[in-house]
Length: 438
Ligand SMILES: Cc1ncc(COP(=O)(O)O)c(C=O)c1O
Image (cartoon, rainbow, N blue to C red; front, side, top):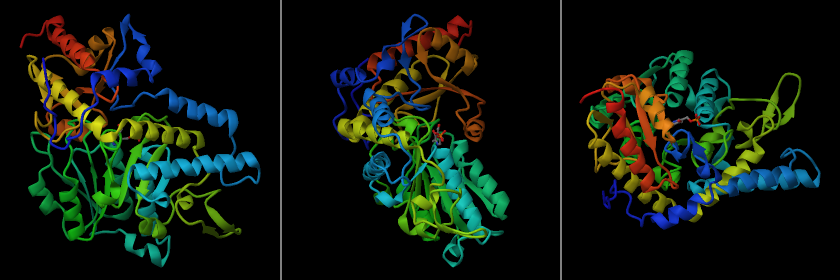
């Protein structure tokens, strides 16, 4: 099969070539692994990505040469650790078009969403004083999400609604896995205080029209939070150009280690928001009854930080930048096109989400008639192929699409066309193996 057309009109850069991908793979030792007697075919980067040697070396170098707590000690090692930690913040900020003081480290994207939800909740309790009054939520206010959210960008808002008396509403998903934008225009209204939505779906792959959604929110003075977990690793993202108020993503999905996530927030919002976690490292003066807090971002970083992880994430960002995000996006668009075209050719396969030509990232989730996703996953695993099965932390979306579970194959910059083809060829064997006729 020759597939040369890009998946999406967005991806106009020169895609990474097969020879370049072959060189990239040399940087990822785990890709040499054999699984069940077969070369590992890792198609689960949507869940977590693999690490290049430079990322592992950055973490090791920190522990071998600079390990100390940051922003505390008056010794040389503490200065070196602080310098590397803050340089990592600057690297990540530049990567997404933010200011350095607009980057708050968290453990993962889930914690970043919770940080915003709890800060708004604290403001609603009256914390943060006059400056935080504009964040107060209560009965009559509305928080809007979409029906395609990962649970990480849904449950914190359900809980915030419960704590404040606000109402949670959602923009529905259409049969083809895209948002119903006409409905969005009526769901987002004068009561809307916050609109939280995913940039790219981890299940159906849809890339949502950020500009249109931001415009709806701006028209009613609502804040916007973008879940960028599946976009920042895969396409160029400029938060200032997108004009979102908050954005969240996780290091482990973009070649970095686990344990590090990022909250981007506009400086003027961070300046007025009360903190979520409190304790050491985020204060100026403390007495037995009160505490004064540091300026952002430190105000939101209580306790000893994830120092080696932040430094390793910066190494991951350097790797992505040197490779070129636009070229990665274009490559994954080709792989995604190949995946979709191949899946659509297999009897009994129903791809969830928009078809060829739509704005999608390079992953595909599907249902294979008559075979449970766990059986599909197990059969593929026997052949060394790693995919994700289940509801991918998006139960409402699966319910909306009429399935309880699906199988997801997701690509990244190290995925080869041969791996996509091997996956498709092996998948063809699954229904006959289980005696299912289509
Ligand atoms: C779209 C999306 N949002 C949020 C998350 C949560 O990321 P984490 O578990 O790293 O916090 C994920 C992870 O699968 C995701 O794909």
